[in-house]
Image (cartoon, rainbow, N blue to C red; front, side, top):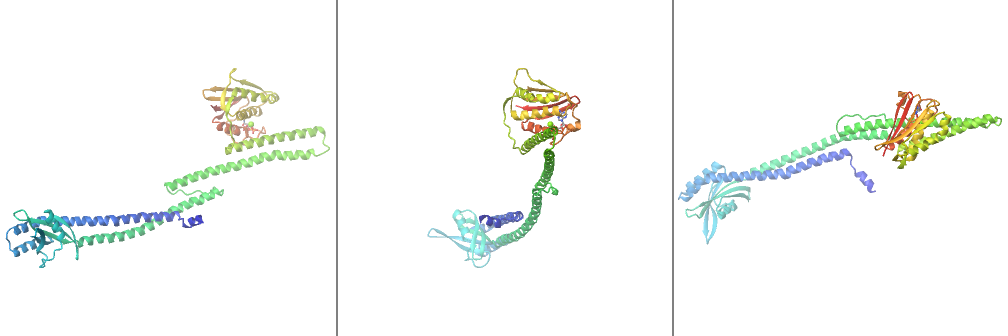
Length: 474
Ligand SMILES: Nc1ncnc2c1ncn2[C@@H]1O[C@H](COP(=O)(O)OP(=O)(O)OP(=O)(O)O)[C@@H](O)[C@H]1O
Ligand SMILES: [Mg+2]
């Protein structure tokens, strides 16, 4: 239920990317609107107030001097009008009346017109009066916000007699800020639409490439290795496509090897089974003379032995391939192990007219940490080969020794040697280099086992001397 809901709500990669583009742009627009516009407003207002203070400082000197001397009201008015014209601001002169010890401000003259009773910039003027210093600030009036700068004018005795106020409406500042706000909104809207569109286009392109990978992965999962993904860029997805193509080739090689292995293995199994079937049919003939019957039974035994060895070898190889073959390392005396495995071959050696010479350090063990069963298996494979793939009477030397942390066991024969072209392939499963009727699994198993023991199996061969060396670390 919850999963179904989540599936329904889950967005595609392209939707998410487009939304992310949109979200980031929305944040940028919101920051512009909420941070830049108010900042602009306070900066412009500050500039306006600084300009008013500058104008008040520059133009109030003459008015102050005239106030100090007994200048007629008309002349004072003219001075205020001049200052207003020069600065572009409204100039108001307020007189300070002290009644009952409380200082009151009253408009004495005003450059804007003949109504001296309006005193909209009272707050700033009061501040200048109370601090005795120039003041500036914003005043809210019925006609909107205005900026004002006030300067106190002192009598000869030092007391403040007047306050001169320069003021101007802040409407143009607000207008500029509002224009910027509107333009930011409009630009933001366009940017959002573009971000959504661009995000969708980019995300669609990305999603298309990801989908291509998904399709290819599904094909490989279905066993089809034929289609390569085009590599159209060097970015992460391009590199993923390259890695995917490499993986696909590797899988294809492994798949081919696996199919070849199965085909060869089933062929190898089929041959003795088929031959066994034939002999069983022949043995059913009751008129068979005892001599022929014995010969057939010998053949049957041989085929059964071959099948037995083949099935064990195949099982070992598949376990090694899948990593399921477990090694059981323990401390082993390799001199003793070599001696005992070589001893098993006495009947075979006698049949082959061969002699096996053991070369081991006199009276000393060769201790190593390894799986004795698997080392013995490798040794059997090597000695068996030295007997099977060489002419009668071949001499074999088996030796073992330790050098530092490396133990080597070698099996050498003085047979005809292995051709270099054959040598390159003898460790492949099912490869046989002669017609000795082997199934070609011995050396494949031996080298895999040696590798699993963190060692190795090497061959050096020329006419009259073939040496297989097993190296074990530890
Ligand atoms: N000592 C050797 N002298 C000459 N040729 C050898 C010798 N050992 C191996 N070879 C060659 O290497 C091939 C592969 O050997 P491997 O032991 O893997 O398979 P096999 O002996 O043919 O069959 P299996 O061991 O499975 O019964 C052999 O068929 C043979 O041609
Ligand atoms: Mg062999």
